[in-house]
Length: 134
Image (cartoon, rainbow, N blue to C red; front, side):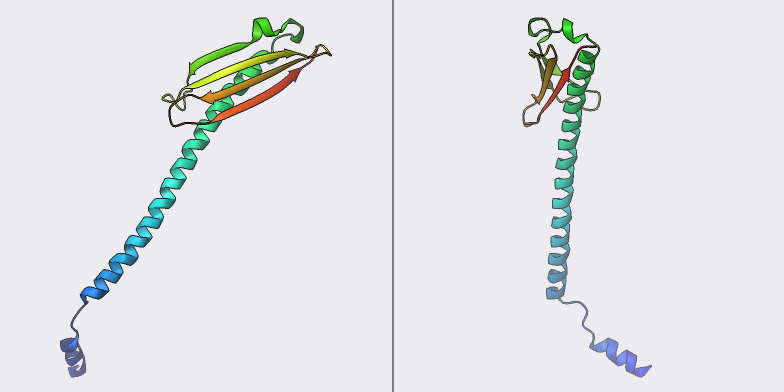
């Protein structure tokens, strides 16, 4: 028991250098976790924008799939829309351009391009589908 008391009397506690080293280590770990979190949030936002643009493009192609291809032509079915939004991203604006091409075999090719028009967003998706006679 006397040995433990003598050991405790000689123990000076934690030095300032040890505290500083521990602080630097904890700070570096915190910075790396923060960087990972920020990267993850950016990736998630880009994924949401890509998903919304894809949904807008595929919705338009689905609408055109219900039309008889022989009734489609570039003068009546080409379309350009602006300020489109989705329920998942109400603050992000998109523009959608639809182009119908009449092919030599009487089929129709529909190109839909959706672009994010909100500042700081540079996502564009393009989908093409060809429709033939029924």
